[in-house]
Image (cartoon, rainbow over all chains, first blue to last red; front, side):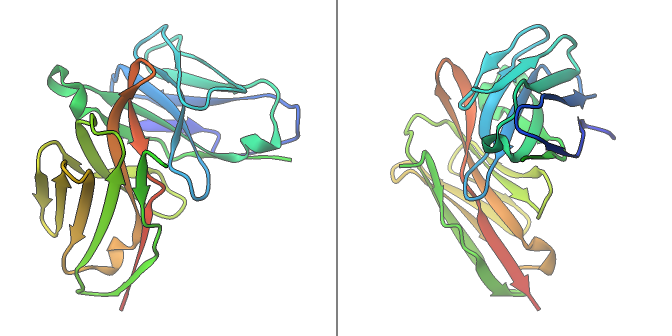
Length: 117
Length: 112
């Protein structure tokens, strides 16, 4: 019953430090996503992946890198954290039932709360 | 203008009330829509999908008006457990990929 698991749940960084957020899914989904959620704004897509070994930029990719070496894992890296990256980060995965992209339903992890001081 | 806009609320309603949220979207090419529910400090969870004119699931009804580019969510007989933020989501296509475009959410508080 794990679904989408994110680690860590909380983290405090100093400006300039680096870290990696891990997302793991056990549903054999092809697609995986990283979002950030800020107060008063909708979730914004950072990067996404349509399969193992592939990644692509989303709406707000600057300052982040990702990797998908295994189908079940999607890593989000911050090389040099900035206060503007203080946010809640959600990972999601999805599949496309019947090959119909309009039925792209996403399942979310519990989130990582990141503060950059 | 935001691609998906919602009234942030909060909507404060008594138990048993009927409440409706509206959501407008700017991309007329959007093909499908979703309502997600997000509890405080939790992840979003899918409530309903809307692929045609509407969808109904128990006390929840979603309606899509493509001509006016809005989606509504109606909750009948509100329960205390319905208190949450409701996210309106449109599936769009831009920058070479399909993407979900999230509204900022409408907060609902149901009181005894």
